Image (tube, rainbow, N blue to C red):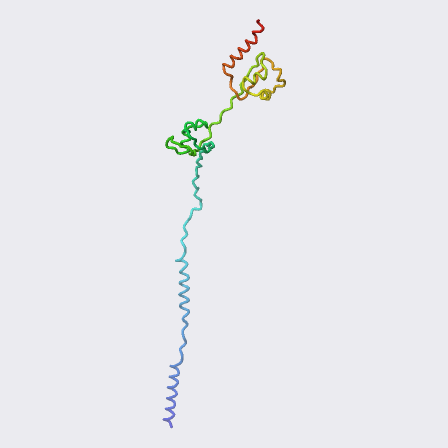
Length: 207
């Protein structure tokens, strides 16, 4: 009886020991160490990753001022027109006809020489404008009339009336200065004929 009791007790003790050995061990928390390491790394990272700030001079560099180069004004070019060469035309005759120079015609038409042909179209510059002659002054002589003076210079009588503001064309005072527009001084021959006319007029009085 004692043997059975001892055997049962031994079995109970063995079972207790085995149950104690097979009890699950608590799993240690593994987050504490990594968290600490992460905190250490996080605290160390900013110091190593701090950007290097370079000192920048905020004063703007003055830009070099551009010196404005004056643009030369183009030389005024006279107008041109097209001229069709006629038979017998030459560079010289065309230049003379339009009061221009032979060189200008060559330059405008890129002519290496003066060889041109009938039907050829040339660019011709407008010639120099003909200056308007200043009005010539005529002093009225004894026996002259408005019509005789107009005939002497080849102008119309009404032109003399308008230019000189003549109130009475039939009564020109001797010594009056009349402006003769658009004409030059009369030729010497004309003056001689006028003088001879005056002498002829005085001859009847001497007879």
